[in-house]
View 1: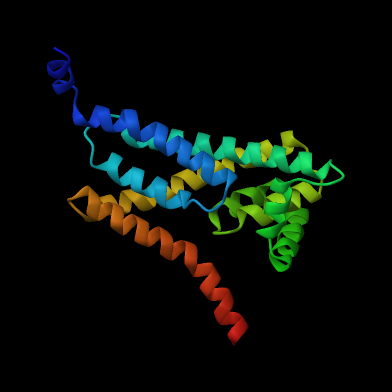
View 2: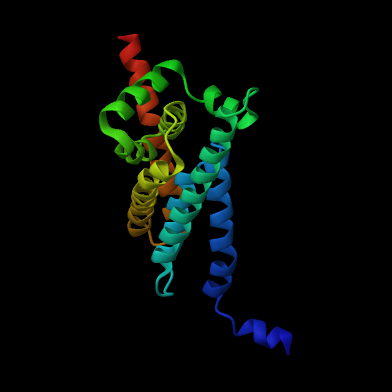
Length: 204
């Protein structure tokens, strides 16, 4: 009886039941510990959703990814604020400082002074730009409410951008796995391009 009931469950329903919570957790962890390639995860999920017949699959990927990214950012900023208010700092604050080179931090501080919270949107779209801007916000003692106001559109724009990369990859190939490979490759190229460009400029 159980086997027959399981056989009637569409494969896509099973994928969604496992995939959406997994995507949420991985993006959340990636926001807290910036070593997980969250952009590639969202693009890959978008490819799979693009090839599914279930309605609202792409919308679900967008909602899950943006909410997880937002919650991860807020949690990390809150932990950073606790570190700023502590005499001994915190390991989270130290991790932010370790990932924010002095030149990138100086640029982030300058842009924050010029553009305010709107710089958070750009920081989410530029590879390795989120942490220096977040640290600049912490050093400027930006209130949590103000940070939230800038981070909401930042996470929405980030989710849309990487989902579009996934849709592009999915539309080019018939097999989902081919689209996933293409989306991940494109995401890695986009992520690596700014670093390569900076090294080329320094070499010149």
